[in-house]
Amino acid sequence: MDYTLALLLSLLQLLSAGTAAPAPATAPVPAEVVKMKSKVKWIAEQLLVRLNRDFQAPLGFQVSPRADDLDGTSSIVMVLEGYNSLISDDLDNVSQIKHDISSLSGFLDQWRQEHCTGQRPKPSVPGPLQELQSKKEFIHTVSIEALMRVKEFLDLLLKNLDNLKTC
Image (tube, rainbow, N blue to C red; front, side, top):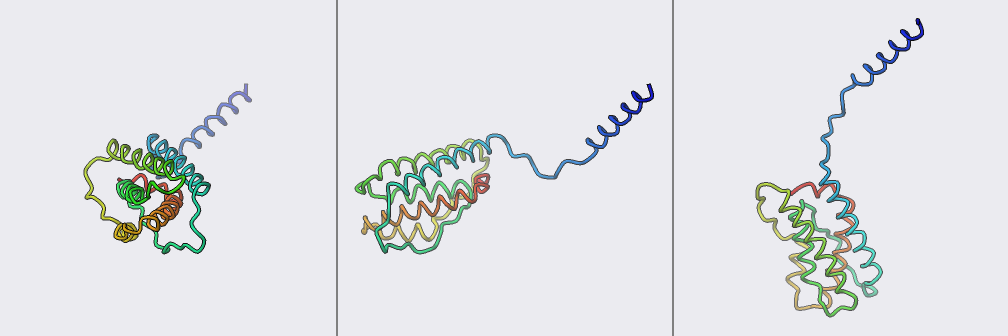
């Protein structure tokens, strides 16, 4: 009988000690954000595989090292759509890549419309994209640079998936 009482008191002490500690002060991430990030990650990774497999820049071709900023889903959609519009359909193996970029930007835009309350001002066109848009007359060169910048942008996006929480 003494053992039963001692065991009961020990269990009560363990339970009270286990529940007395305050929870960490981090806010829980809603399930839909986790699901969205997971889907974006998967699409971006698949797109990068396809870009690396189907597209190689000509030897010696260099892109200026400036990356576009990730300022929430609105700017991400704008950058992806902007580069996609600059990629010529005449390049080999590019139709599926353009479709995948469009799918990713469409998914993000739809998610933003469903989950972001309040309208943020339309983001301004980032410098690198704006610069490339001003050179549209050089279709082939602009297309290659746009593809390389999409690769760079997707790498940046994958490293900063938390920016997707921002509208």
